[in-house]
Length: 390
Image (cartoon, rainbow, N blue to C red; front, top):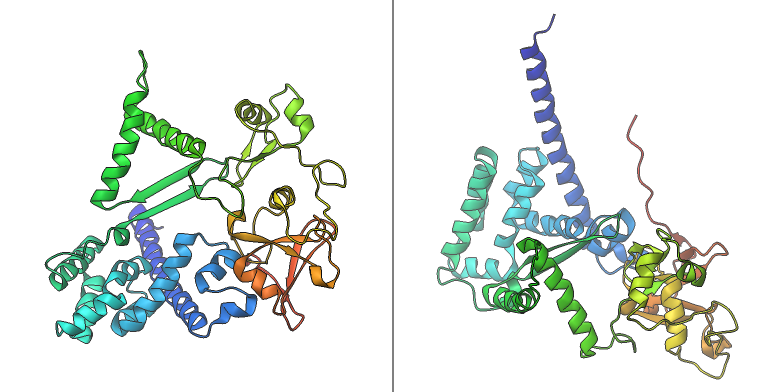
């Protein structure tokens, strides 16, 4: 019989084996991504970059797609680290940690300082293989500090990052990294709202008050009307809801769809409508002038609103461009007799609008799905999730 200790040891051995195998698979994936990038493979599917292709066709997050592409570029400069990654000794996370060393600017600075990149590669690989991850990150940090002991040039944009992650229930998680001056500006703006809204008996914690202040900041900014106009439309909070649900006094869960894709209840939509303009959009010949015929070539704001509500973003397969990046495209060109109406319209980002005027084709199916074809007549398909190997 096996003792509990032996079983635990076997489990730990399995974990270590799988971690090494994952590292090897990550290394192979990184190499393939790099090869596809160098060969400009995404152009075949009408996309500009590997990052956009990974988001649209493999459903990766923007952060993960960017990390894969960045790791491939990093390993091209560090062959010893790449070899250790191939062998399963180095993780994708470690490769990502060293990416800052091989930016074009820092490679130039290293060359000017007489740094031997081969020696640096060997040192980094040795630390990555033999030392804890935290020690590896420290070595990278010390190298960057030594390369530029006076600190970086005062370019505040280099250190700024903000990501918004939408969850299945429509809620949003925001993570930001700001330079000292930018952070000070944001804190000053938020604090003004926090301190202006402190009613008696307020039991909200600090984090809750800051969250409310952040939303109030957005409310105030949108209400000011001073934001840039996007595609002839002022920035606004949009909700699409059937008129029956809007009028029904019931709660009506999941009845409204917001402009960025969140789903809300009818009750929530009615609450928003109390302080908003309610626009009637009829997907047909009566109501808002969706069918403009041949008299008008460019879609007006009524037609654009209807196309945005129907398409939700660029309809080119694999593209995730939002509505405010997109243009209203005539499926049958206006010069060829195509009319300016909802049926003959498609929302396309600027890049893919150009693509469909140079051989690519998009078509809306009777069930409402959009399909895309290459100039050679083959269809662009997003990759289905692969079944686990038997």
